[in-house]
Amino acid sequence: MRPEIIYTQLPFNKEILRLKKKLNAVILAHYYQESEIQDIADFVGDSLELAKKAKTTDADVIVFAGVHFMAETAKILNPNKLVLIPDLNAGCSLAEGCPAEDFKLFREKHPNHIAVTYINCSADVKALSDIICTSSSAEKIIQQIPKDKSILFSPDRNLGKYLIKKTGREMLIWDGSCIVHETFSEKKIIDLKIKYPKAKLIAHPECEEPILMHSDFIGSTSKLLWYVQQDASKQFIVATETGIIHQMKKAAPEKQFIPAPPEDDSCSCNECPYMKLNTMEKLYLCMKNRNPEITMSEEIRLKALIPIERMLSMS
Image (tube, rainbow, N blue to C red; front, side, top):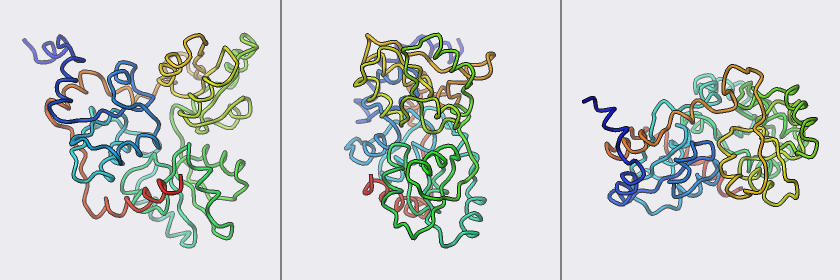
């Protein structure tokens, strides 16, 4: 009998909980993970919340159900803990579109600028940055930078443009984007707003500018989740990765959440293909085998820790 057939027959929930106790592990999951992974996690959050949780955990093992840069951040904050990720190929288009070598050249061309870098980047890029930010902390962080200081913002151009409007600060922006948040169709969203006239459009700031212009509320995943709970509306069109809708339905089961449609009808392009690489089977296997493990050189870790600590102190 093939091993994969044996694995698919295992009661993953029970085995994962057993291994969590055995390893003294904590399972951290991003809002964009599959619903069953969110439900078995000890904590579900956005990038900033997960970074804070990773920093304060007393577990011996951190199992990070998210993408690679998130698990790297946990390792940077916890050098003496074993940090596992279900699938090592769970990357990020923003991180992949900002190679450390190119980012280094970008910095060298603008030596007098402060590099504020979105957390969606590699440990090597973090090590070359001055301050890391998340979508929930970026505006607050930029407002704390003296106005006589020039800013480089990387790697998300849409978030950068949004922050320029919000803060009034001029910034040089790296030309990168999220493959999920750039896929939403303005025309189809307008059609949805006509079909559901009482629905509010809520969007992540990584979305393209036309989508943000139509939005009733713009915020990070955690802020979108907060908004649908406190707002009186009963219907919401959600322009971010569809995984967050699981938490929205749990928090406000009486409300309706409509995924914003992508341009391409032939794919589920409003789902992150990287996030969805993680499965319950892979979560079980990484805990069983204590692998894949996140590793990096101590030199890079220490350099990357500085801008991350600045983010945490400024958030």
